[in-house]
Image (cartoon, helix red, strand yellow):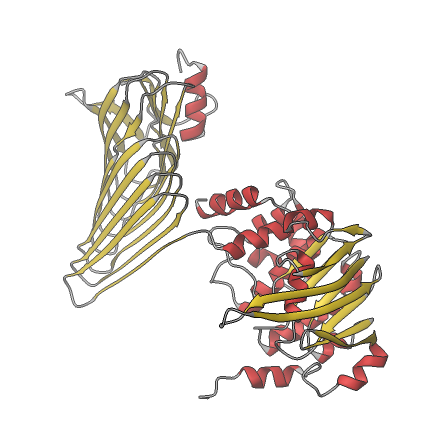
Length: 250
Length: 310
């Protein structure tokens, strides 16, 4: 369903020379699979997710979506082909309400509030409290994250990519979020790729791909890969994420 | 309602959401003269003796009623000047709609300068909706000009919410809003403004908080595109223990220019006054997010602006 061939991605560094973020990544992700891409911070995972969504253009290599070469396709075109992307840092909009955003996601201006509420309930939000809230700074990180995931679920895409759903949220929000991902296969109709190094998310994957220093360090079935990476930077517990995120002065 | 034509019908729908003869109290002003009017038992509309406009008198205790006084101009070269005074009794809860629309079919400027004065009695609650709209025939060179002045006098415990929108077709506007807020009274002003082409819009809001526990909340959102220019001044003066908040957000695009000058003036040590102002382009990540939902870049931009000005 999604095939990456020899993907390279370079950006200019401070000295003006090219820095290689991704080195020759080739992947073949079959239809209907739940794949988690993990690896240490700075290894290139989120860059790869953005290349799949069309946000970044690869320096070299080709991308195929259902056998169609989409390397040159823009974000909108890919989205309309059946690709969805949940941001690591959900975007805020002044004036756009949660209902507006869900209507935009399903491309149906007439979608009723009752129907939109179903998507919010799926991500554990009490829909009536949120449907007319603005998607702005008045929402917490956890609330925004769940609304972001709801917009992706609402689209029922053939491919859904979630970039670090655990990033920037507290432990309580994460506990609720993990329940959503435990049922994600029932909530979507297609292939799921999650960028995460959280062991509870890795534990529900069909396949795990480890990306390190811009290269694939390991890939295979969850039962094969997870035992090898437990306790490393590629598979950390939520408690450790929380501890690492604590300000040093506290 | 008499002699309604298609232009008038369209403009009334745009500015006052009127699609047929309105119910309740109304006064429709068409090309500088009253076209139709209706008073009710509690809301009485009468012409001023000097012919400069109308008086709207609302009896004490009038609740859940509305009054609609739209203005339509469809003559090119007309300069319409009007003064409308609202005398709102005590303990009322009412809605007032006062839109103005210009259809310019020629090469001369059409202009509407309206002065609206609100005298709001004790403990009354008023929602005031004002929408300005302009359009022109293809090829017509006449400008659409509107210079509305609003004066608001809130007696003790009164509350007024003013919602003012100018989204389309006004080439030049100079808006002035002044308010005097007594003890325990509250003023909320929400202004939405979009300028495009070579349009110029200036808005000035002055609120004097003269009574104990009075408050004002002024929220302005504007979008300036093409070569247009938008200017916003707000000035909250705290003359008593009071609270005031002014928020001005603007999206700037193309070669537009925006000036925002929120001002606070505390004349009492217990005046708590805050202002926020931000001007910026549409964030790239906002466009990308909406593109990942399948919107084209143009659709994404329009959705962001629509939401911002909602």
